[in-house]
Image (cartoon, rainbow, N blue to C red; front, side, top):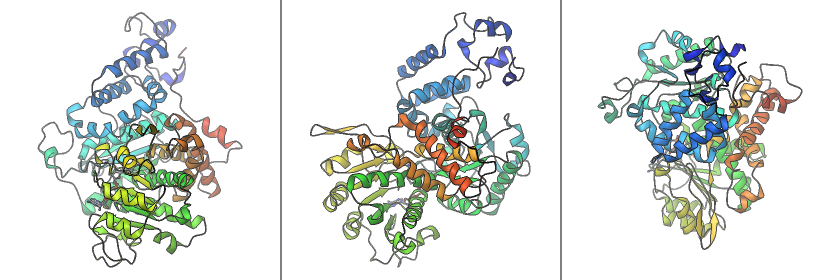
Length: 545
Ligand code: NAD
């Protein structure tokens, strides 16, 4: 008997989601593994099971019900879950990740069924290694950790934010084939300042105010050290931390351990790729582009920093590159004369008169691209978009705030207000828009185009660090996969159905970068493509006999 069963039989086998095949256990397996009689008699193929799952899934009347159904399937039978998700990604991704995962997090305590991942609280100080030891899988390679302070654009959801690491890791597996047993979701439950959660008797987290200061930093530090001790090959991805912690944690750890922050660096990768593709439509090269960001937080500054790296790689000086990026935050245009700017905004604070009105700032700066990363729904009003349309033959309008309800404008508004000339991308998906008989398919600046491939490349090379260069390389690779056909319908990213191909290409490029920079902790394989693809999980059932 193959050793991946770890001696499991009978009910234990059926209750292990990584091994369970449900009605797909063959007759011979049912006898040999002690599950005869524990299953209905008819043996079904995985394809038939998929048919049943899709039927039940599509019968659900709300997206949240669909989410609950899929998560329950994941808890029973991971291969089937991934088969369904991977073969129907367009339909499933908005359910297992943004936007539906946002609703799920808001109601997490109310829809909670079975625990997944690790919860670590301040009372675990001094014993985090022991908690990691409780995790049933030894070869962890990808960890997503959040403290739930800034879940999507929904704010502080405390321990309810666990839906994010769970969902994100599902995407690592579905999009890039990182084995589910190598993925570990962690909730660092340091409390919440959201009163409605503190007052909710079904809230699953520690019902206390957020831990701050040194005690918080020490807890994170212990987690980082414990991860290095227990899972030395793992990459630790920080996700949906509040803005101040996100920047300071990245700054503290990025040169010390294998880590990255997807909100900052992954977002930057996908947006840079979008700008490269959009420039093929607008004819304005990145080196000539002026970009105005509405929102100067993790996403905005991360994108700005990567654009500066990209421009420097094309020979532009750092000072010039920075002046191509302008920011507008909740207090107005980010300018040098302001005295209220936090550290990460200072490098983009240029000399200019203060300006509190976005449309006026657009008119004054004449940007080629307007990128919304503010979480402020509707901020791209008709006058704002119209000024962009007057200034540019093909204005680049990226309304990236998530979930859909937070988008700075809708696809329909962007196309209508520019008479179809906008090159539009959003954070959450929008349905195609038909205007004057022409249909526009907007791009979703979905981080899933970038982080799974980067993660796979890091794992495949056993990279000791995740560098900004890797995100630059990932962005270039992604942009290179956008076809003329994509651009013809207005889409600046490849079709999501190509995600495995995209992730594989990015992983190869990232792994090459790790080897070129001396960051790989293994011998360079002769055939990198075969090396990368050979590691990718496929959700096919194992034959146990
Ligand atoms: P953040 O909290 O770090 O930053 C938000 C920024 O918006 C801050 O600079 C804040 O000053 C600014 N802001 C708030 N209100 C404003 C107002 N009225 N006018 C102008 N600026 C205002 O958050 P973040 O991580 O940068 O994320 C911001 C948004 O971007 C979220 O909605 C998130 O979902 C979205 N996002 C999208 C993607 C994607 O599409 N791939 C990736 C990451 C983040």
